[in-house]
Amino acid sequence: MNRPFNFSAGPAAIPEEVLQTAAAEMLDWHGSGMGVMEMSHRGKEFISIYEAAEADLRELLAVPAHFKILFMQGGGIAENAIVPMNLSRAGVVDFVVTGSWSQKSAKEAAKYASDANVAASAKDSDYTTIPAASSWNLSRGASYVHICSNETIHGVEFHELPDLQALGSDAPLVIDFSSHVASRSIDWSRVGLAFGGAQKNIGPAGLTIVIVREDLLGHALPVCPSAFDYKTVADNGSMYNTPPTWGIYMAGLTFQWLKRQTEGGLSGVAAMEARNITKAKLFYDYVDQSSLYVNKVAANCRSRMNIPFFLHDESRNDAFLAGAKQAGLLQLKGHKSVGGMRASIYNAMPIEGVQALVDYMRDFEQRQA
Ligand SMILES: *Cc1c(COP(=O)(O)O)cnc(C)c1O
Image (cartoon, rainbow, N blue to C red; front, side):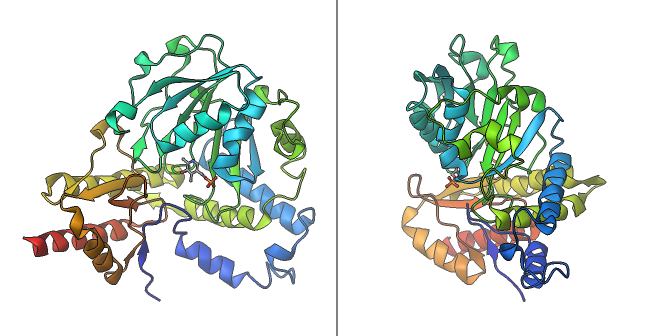
């Protein structure tokens, strides 16, 4: 079967091999006589799936031993409340607002923190830049500093995580890595907590991954639901309540797929990162020399995962999308708040898919001439 290339921002394309394995195991997982969705989360079959998924994620992302990996529910948006309920200590928290997602996070945190301070904002540039870390107005004694390390809607990515200590802050850094987790390596020495929904780069919607430094556990506000208290979740191996078993299984298959990936002598996430750099360069290089298309994000913070782009002549948008669909290139419509188009090229998008998109765009451009 020749499947089209799917550029959805999320829920997004899943590697075909992962879908095929899940299909083959749907009715009977490894001779157990049960499908994964039908298993007790406390049975030995599912426990083995869970433990392998956690160990593989820890290996792939090189997560140090003093961080806990939690499998939760609620998505990135629930984490916008769960993080301040666990980490704010009802004090001041700092936000660097680089797009829709960090803006949403700041707004929600204000319900739990005494102040959700916007330490820096890229609003003046319509979220096409990242303010230099040296210009951030960090609060003294902040409980944490929050960034969205890849802004899925505005297409802005931190290519280096800020070193808060070098900026004179002891606060832990919180990153929302929903839309670029496992696309690149992470410097854990700069991170206190990372969270992300699975449906962009890891698997189906319904699973949320939280990776948190141990010393940050145990400070939840009284209002925090037990099922969302990181310490309770950690102490119970993510099984205080029933975890999203299907999502964990699918994520585990994706992690195994990731471990098999190689690129120029690299493997796993390093291989993905090399491939993602190649894919993004192929796309941006084409757009930058084109006279029909434009991407407005500053070169030093362009996302490798989510690329918003515009036709200079916006009246051609519908024709562009209809032709793309006919060419087997799906879900390219931009987010309604930004308009235009958006190509999300997560790990599961092969180079061939990006090449097919560029070929279509070139062809469309020539037909306009
Ligand atoms: C998609 C996304 C979210 C929201 O995830 P939900 O699962 O809808 O809660 C949050 N942050 C970022 C960066 C995202 O890309």
